[in-house]
Image 1 (tube, rainbow, N blue to C red):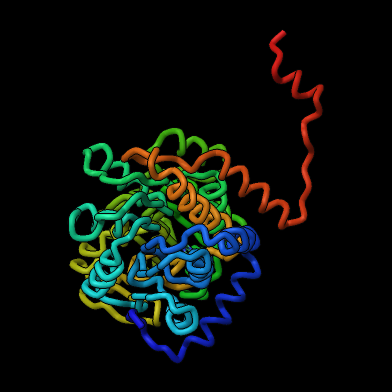
Image 2 (cartoon, rainbow, N blue to C red):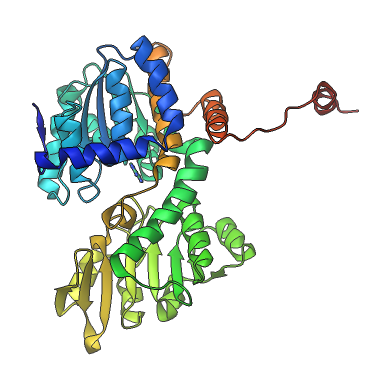
Length: 415
Ligand code: ADE
């Protein structure tokens, strides 16, 4: 069977993890039932570049049972759960190309393998698959009708491609759905980032100065959860509106150069490069911990950190100790790659349920509307977003009120 994974003997353990995640993915399970009974993706080639986790596995199984030919590669070299990759290949017969800790070279080879299945739909997280296909147009994408994108960074890249007229197929920005970013980015990243930092370091957050760089939806989640654990949270921002929101939420807001002097733990969640740069690294306290929760490992200037260091020690599986001038030690978690998937298992299934429901329904939307869609980046249709919110509430056994006729009339009147 086509695929490249670490160890097939991990498959039975991986199957258990996939089944465990499914218990907390009721919306996706409902979609799976509808899709599989109608085989809505019969013989459709779907190439997926996603974090290879137990939650992702449930999306892939949904697509496969709906008739699609699916293949999967990792969307980050360090996020793969090898047991899940083994189960996908051995039990579910899904060609999977992902090995935790793979080199950038292998990562790119895996991307190429999946791109070469001649996909009709791509499901991407970070836009590496889309970029590869666009850069090498003719080779990979003669049948492509559209794609979906999971994350903020990927949507930013795709919008940049569209602006420069480089985009060659319609894309649905799953990240922009309210049932995605308000939950996955905020509560998912919030919880799983702290989970990663704690699993890697065993550190107590209470009383620590915890610096969050970026107050987007991920940064908000991280800041709020760190405060909940008793940390004194400092936020750094470049956007005046977001900075003001952070201030009024009760966080200290200051430039990174100032935060560098007092922070115990630093987490980046900006989607930008060199947010923690040489100057701020130089100012940091001995023992400061550094982590990144953004998609790419470019938010902490790793090259400068290396250049500054006399010695690099491996403390444990997740921590490197950089010894810089005056014997000062800076501790880097998960190589500066996304800490929630590097040192923990990513967002919990309950929140990925909504993200992947958006992915599945957006892929269906692309198939149904393939003749109408233009080459641009679309938001997820509001109908899909609302439907997912309703299904999630229902699965949680939560009822809400309905507008009365009198209230509807009142809202429609101006007098
Ligand atoms: N992104 C963040 N957490 C994730 C998870 N558990 N599965 C897939 N993608 C993710």
